[in-house]
Image (cartoon, rainbow, N blue to C red):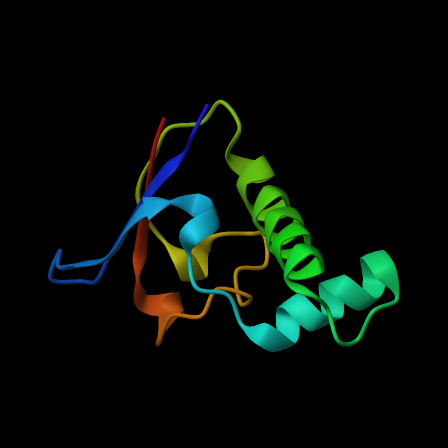
Length: 97
């Protein structure tokens, strides 16, 4: 099942809408995850894609079976700092299944 994310600001303007795996991710976080998974500090596109998938899977796991509607990122328990969006702590997350 594909999970769609909607990320909005305090004015309800959409900042991101789409597949969870299409979210922009901090390259340094991809690199850290690639080192953890493959001992690879210069990850190829395949390792980068897998690292992104693992980062996102870990983040989304906390929402299994839970409806998420306009939850402020700073109130989310799991680390979200790998997501490359300005002032993400002030944005809101909605998950559509």
